[in-house]
Length: 146
Image (cartoon, rainbow, N blue to C red; front, top):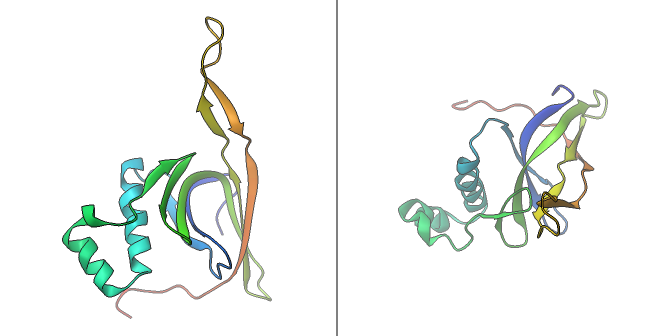
C-alpha cells in the first residue's frame, strides 16, 4: 500500500470503455525529460510488433509523439496515454474482494495571462485541483525471468 500524501507520476489510458486505465505509476523524481520517451514506448507496446521495430529503428518516425499539455504529457489517439504528476496518491486493497482502489489529487492547471497592472499576477488557475479515483482487480506481482 502506498502511503498517504505520496507524489508520483501517474500514467493512465484515456478513452472510451478502458478496461484497465492504469498504465504506470512512476517515481516522482523521474526526470520530466524522460516521461515523453517512456509514454511513447508504452503506447508502442500496445500496438503491433512492426510498430515497435519501426519505433526502435527511428524514434522520430513515431506517428504519435508525446506532446506537452496542461500539467503533463499525452501520447496517442483514442485511447491515448496521459502522464502527470499527482499528489496524495494512495492505494487501498480490499483483502476479501481483491479490488484495489487508487485515489489521488490532480494538480491545478495554470495558464499565463497578460498583466493588467504592474506587479499583477502572471498566471491564473484555469482548472482547480480535483480528486481522482479508479478501481482495478489486484493481480499478483510478476518477476522477470520466471
